[in-house]
Length: 220
Image (cartoon, rainbow, N blue to C red):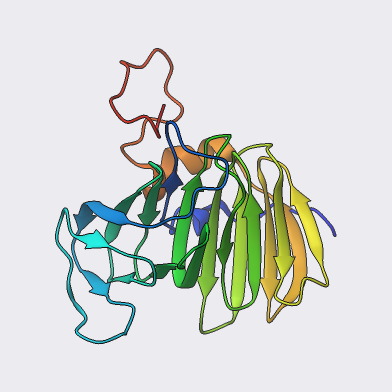
C-alpha cells in the first residue's frame, strides 16, 4: 500500500453517520430503528421491497428494511442499542436481521461506534469494514464499483475486499480505496478539514471545545 494526499473536496461531498450510546451488551443484535431526523427526499424500503413510500420522522424500521435518499437529502436512524446512523444523499442503506451489520449499496454512511458494543460491520458490494468503538465513513459508487473507507479514530478499523483476500487496518486520517474488489491505494486526508467541511458531521459539534453538554449520548 502507499500513501498519497487525496483531494479533500471529495470527502466534503459525502454523507452518513452511525453512533452508539449507553448500556448494551457486547453483542446486541440490531432489532429496530427509528427515523430521528430527515431532510428532503427520503424513501422507506420494506424488507420485501414492495410498497416503497416516503419516510417520515419517527417512522419505525425493522431488520431487513432500508432507506433510499435523493439529492441533497439526509436521514438519521436511531437503533435499539442507542446507535445513530446518518445516511447521506443518493444512498441506499439497510440493516440486516440478527446481526450488527449494515449494507450500503450506494452513497455514503458515517459511523460512530462507542466502545463495548461488539463488532459492527458495514458492507458494500465490493468491500467491508469491521469496527469496534470506532468512527468511520464509507462511500460506495455503484457506477464505478468503488468503495472508499475512511477512519476518523485509532480504534481497530479493519477493511477487507469482497473475498477477504486483502485486509488493512486503518489509523485516523487514513482511507482505503477499493475498485472492483481490489485495493487500489491507502491515502491520508485532513481530519480537521473533514469535520469543518463535510455535510455528514454538520450540527454534531464533534470538534468544538468547551461545549455545552448535549442530550444525545451518542454524540457525547
